[in-house]
Image (tube, rainbow, N blue to C red; front, side, top):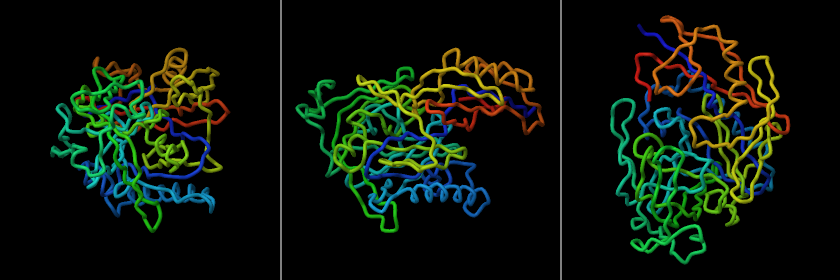
Amino acid sequence: MDSKYICLLILVGLSSALRSEGFGTFGFDIHHRYSDSVKDFLNLDGLPEKGSLDYYAAMAHRDQLIKARRLAVTPASPTPLSFIGGNETSRISSLGFLHYAIVTVGTPPLTFIVALDTGSDLFWLPCDCTSCARSLNTTSGKTLELKIYSPSNSSTGMPVPCNSTTCGQRRRCSIRYNACAYQEVYLSSNTSSTGILVDDVLHLATDDSQEKVVDAPITLGCGIVQTGDFLDAAAPNGLFGLGMDSVSVPSTLASKGLAANSFSMCFGPDGVGRMVFGDKGTPAQKTTPFNLKQSHPTYNISVTQIIVGENATNVEFSAIFDSGTSFTYLNDPAYSVIAEGFNSQVSEPRYQPETRIIFDYCYALGANQNSFEYPNLNLTMKGGDQFYVNAPVIVIPRQVRFY
């Protein structure tokens, strides 16, 4: 029986933008999974073919996004920048439901597909590694060999010395490599990246017809040892930290006067969107302020109201906007407000999946049922703007193993 069930994703993502005021603009498009370069790089299946209705619909949506942003740029604004030669990204379900971007680093340039993570600061790549993912099995059964970075093979790469101001008091010196060491530990069980810091260039290009090359000096992590999910489940080819620490790429671009210390990130319902360093946004863009803590600032936001269908509940809580986490974890009372409100408006019977399925509220679909109705979910943020949750449910075939 080819039956399915749906599960409520209380652990949801927001279709919104991170923003602050500033000058200078650098950017790259989030074209999601429709471009040839993403298909070739990942060999993904089930993507819209060039020339199909879905393909042109996706491209039209992309054009609208780009046009809206360009109309907001004043004549005095610098030309936006994109990742050179591969600015497309894709949300890959089999790799942690994260959004990935193709970036180019070093001389000669090497390309990597890295997860975008607003919840961490360091941009690191697998590098001269003793423990890392060297290949990726695609959905079509093929094996994709992943690039491995090495500062010794890049004429612009140089290990960060231990006495450098970049190393600082929070990091230690690696005697073996005679360089500044790092260790990043993540929330996923036993997941970390350990190595040394390296100075090199991130290759960008102006986002116009001239496509002028811009090589941005950055500091990145040379990930010698990766553990846990980085070996097979998520970010196997690197992680692009977008946090507020001085080592992050946005902060580095700002400190060198190349861009404002800000960026915008948008995830649309079909995944097509845009991320821009130093972006001021558009007049129609919804906003909400950050709750900044001086000790360790993060992209912390406040929710003031939850709307499930037509039912609105005033409940205030704060949460961290973390694109590197697959789902959003909510505590009570916010969790119960969404779950119970959703459950009361779904007509399908509750279904108890196997224990490794982490979602609490699942519903059985009939063998021939191809559609179902569920209430909209909106969150009202501090400041009054509402943000619509694009995908509050996921459909899971009962006969397919869930990963």
